[in-house]
Image (cartoon, rainbow over all chains, first blue to last red):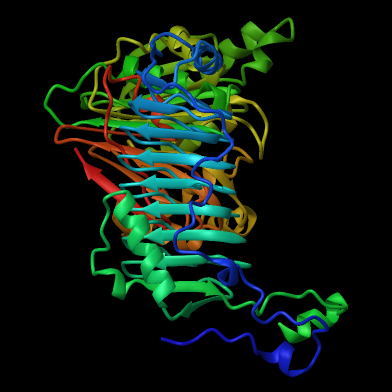
Length: 281
Length: 311
């Protein structure tokens, strides 16, 4: 497998004025890090106090308000049932909470959350966990497209297959997919890590700036500026700890996981005119 | 944005697909409230079922002589059918402008339809032995009440709720589109086609007719053209994924099959539920859930994917 190289036409021409080599999150990567699963300073909640919420006949706004009311009443655990694939549920939860969803969510489920641990027994629609800051979301079945769009922290896990553009614009945290993922996975990814245990579709990691994508299955095609890299011991250690945490396994073993990173040939932090940029790209 | 939905009952006798499709489309109303359309497939009969529109809804609300104008168009349709030897077995109207004919006819169907559409303002929306194509302005509840759809029994159906982006809010730009002149073939589409005019010019030169400026009509005409060139439905659909540019997910139904295709960018949503005797597809799972009172397992098709289910 090829090693990552930052040299290329534009670099050979000496056009870049800024030194970019080694400027990557890999330098401050610690295999034991918690990746914002929760904040140490977040107030403790009483997880033994359980609130229940049956969504039958309620609309999304009323359900989200009811979740907040239960949290205000001191419930550290909420069991939510009959969500009926409704859109925009369980969003904007900004503290510790154990939320157990029995059923499936629609679009934008658990978006903008900052700290809760969510378990969803069914499926999720498009943009689950979008803009999540911290916490964990575990989806037991399949997920739609743009799974974990722009997440900044926390762990987002789908045990089934996900749609296209998984982790688009990811800025941190970890996305773990047990099955397949579609086209443009990791599109414009900026930071964070993604583990796809199954196959990945075309244009994987297209236009990624930084971050790492690990793929356990076949890759149909790499996107512009996504390049393979060699797995190192730190990667293996981290992969094992993450997969063990969620009881998941790489189908061909951790050693056969492919690692994809940014080639950084499209990085153009320089003083070039747009017409000159076209020449070097 | 638009919402699309489709369903097939494989078990004999079918089901109340009118009510099921109305529930599915009403759940997708937030994706487009401008117009709603149905292509429902009942038990095939020997006669042709023709759905004919005499005017746009907006045109029937102005002008002092509008009623007599509609009547004269109606008379002209009847006269031209008689002239070409089409015997009207049954004639109904749900609104002042929407007619449903049952016609026995042995001649060239395309010829008959061209002759009827030659009358100003008249459009043949569909023709087939089992296909009932109904489309009008408003949401699913409004349209189903207007046309009495909720008790319709049949085997499969596709439907559409429209948010107009590329053309006007009127009935001729509403979906589904019938793949003129092929009996029982209909199309619904969610997305935008960016090479509409290139393809339209080419298809028009081959003699195909376009009734609207809606980009989605292109898919119906494209499929019809490919079928006339000898392709089967699946082959035509696979080819369309390469030939049509833009973002789209569309459904095609024929007398005995239902197919879906998704563009190579996978930009438009689709969720599929599959069991041994029932298949449902929709832009959002919340629509499919209207048929079930319990949780279901669904999945998203991937980029460039084409699937065809046989009845």
